[in-house]
Length: 82
Image (cartoon, rainbow, N blue to C red; front, side, top):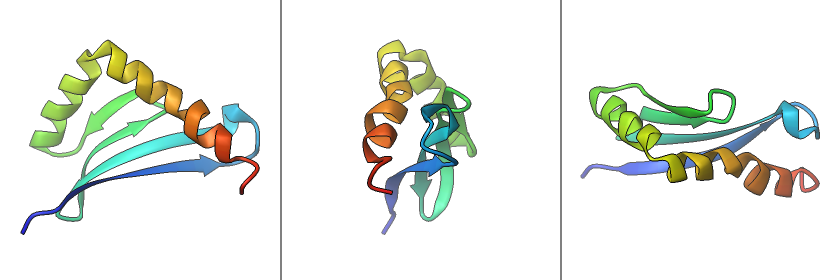
């Protein structure tokens, strides 16, 4: 069968929120097809389908704002745990 999954991660260089990057990657059959990075601030597609999906999600202002807030919501919350 086919496998589609997303992986969220925080890259910590220090406990300062400005030095933390939130990344959400979408994979299809183990190939990364799309990525959101808080450093870039938008989705980037790596395949034909990923580019189409990135264009769609980047056009959705509320979803893009939600993804941009994830750095503080998810990463900042876990600073002390790591």
